[in-house]
Image (tube, rainbow, N blue to C red; front, side, top):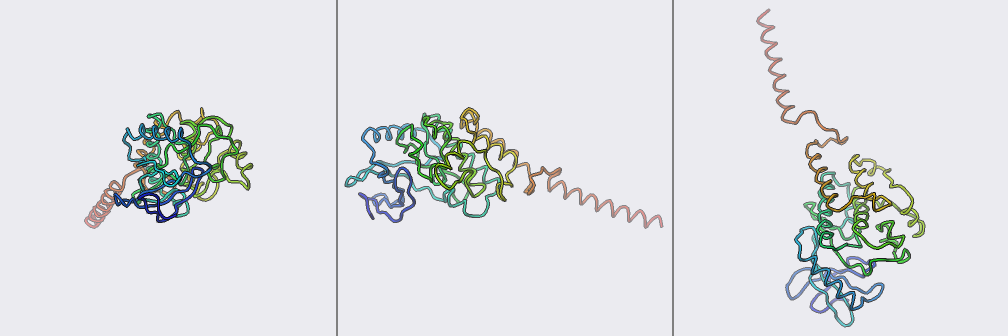
Amino acid sequence: MDKLLHYSISEKLGEGKNGRTYLALDTGLQRPVVIKLLEHPECPGEDWKRGFLEKMKRLSGVRCDSIGSFYAMEQDDGNDFVVREHAAGKSVYSLSQEDPIKYRWFLQVARQAAAALEVAHASGQFHGNINSGNLIVDDSWNARLVDFCLNRTSVRSADSYGERDLAFAAPELLRGEPASAAADLYSLGVVLYHLFTGQLPFVAESTDLLRQAILTQPVPFGGERAGKFPSDARLLIGQLLSKEPVDRFTSAEELSSTLQGMQSYHTELHEDPHGKKAMFSARQYAWMAILALLLIVFWLVVTMDAG
């Protein structure tokens, strides 16, 4: 497939539970876009299309730089697809394979993702499919959450999850409970864990074992990169990954406020690998060194005069 309507497809970006994703060029407006071809597992019905468009109208009524925009829902020769903006940058999937992220950038990405959820939830919209592929981070460590409202149903059976998206599913969703703000927070916790450690919190040899791990096992913070988590980050991610929704943050707003406080505290710290707060600033240390040198010179002068 190389073209849909006036969109010229250049490359496949990925495939998930909602269909295949492509990078394309809108030849009319001459801008890059991302196309999500809604062909998997089944074509959406008219009710779903109307519901999706209504959700996107409500979401587009609020302003948030951390939410990727949808442009249109189209159809070409029986192919249903949605068109969204091309968010420049790398997904967390890609970043997880690179060098460990610095803590200050981790906090910035986390806060912006939380801000996106805060705005969406305030408008009554859940994401429903947060994973490491739809949190995009640019070169300045600005984050954008994309693919809102593409989830087909509010309740899914545990058997309907593929292995890739199962890793991001909240325990209550695996128990057949409906999607919620709390489930979005859990999925974001998995993504943030992935971003910081380079791996997912729960892995297993089969989907059955993975479900069991998500439902029963504590969050592991072992390993070289996970072991470098500051204590406040461990507490935050551990709370996001609580098995019960009531034990997580009460809202994305509370999460965002908590991250803001963590950012403020971190700016007071030096780039100390142990995360310890410096007793004095660099300027204060410089003045102390100058004062010590003057005292030494003064002592030498007094000693020479006395001799």
